[in-house]
Image (cartoon, rainbow, N blue to C red):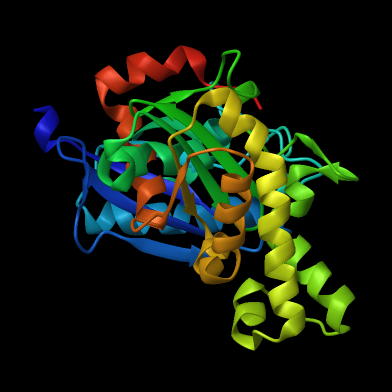
Length: 309
């Protein structure tokens, strides 16, 4: 029965939502059930939830799921993952959902009579998916990092997320850790790259892709600083955790030819032997990881350790 079960993996991005039906048995994405809807993260609560439900309902229809919708969410923080309470505040996205119960409010918009919600940090879901299906499968101690509108991270041991312990930050999260004049999220995100390029070149750009396409001396400096900063920030965590592999995803990872060699060289100079790979699953990893919440063995493993961050 479990092998035939179809659940939805839902990835909440900074500017869009993607959902897909996933076969729980082999964690494969069901063809022709992947849907994406753009979302304005500064919009009203009503508008955001309507966009989310539109995407989810499209996938439910494509997968012919009519009775019970099992929705596993890859959700950015800060968020109460056990209860589904959004705590977005001061992180420049979805702030109109602050203190909103996603299960209570969103279920009214889903086109099935029965809805079951489970939530996981988006970077953790990415890490779980990558460790289940991708290159990280062959490593025991892994850190997954997502680089985009925010700075996501997940610590994994043998495919299971580590959120508490002496060798991991609280929740397995990097984003809130102090770094330079602020927190890590200020430095390892799209907004830092855009701001730094503007400071160096006096040119406004819309995103990291544009900086990579320009590839002028200012762009190269931005990426070099990005790689050096990341090495400086992450090295102590790699050492403490005994990390064997760092797997990178998110939109900024597409620019890896510019910053990854600097990052790797700086980590080697710090005396650490750690492999780095770019996820070949990309967004699919978070879809698969969040859907895995409906595997009973995996749910039993993580349900009591879901962070409220």
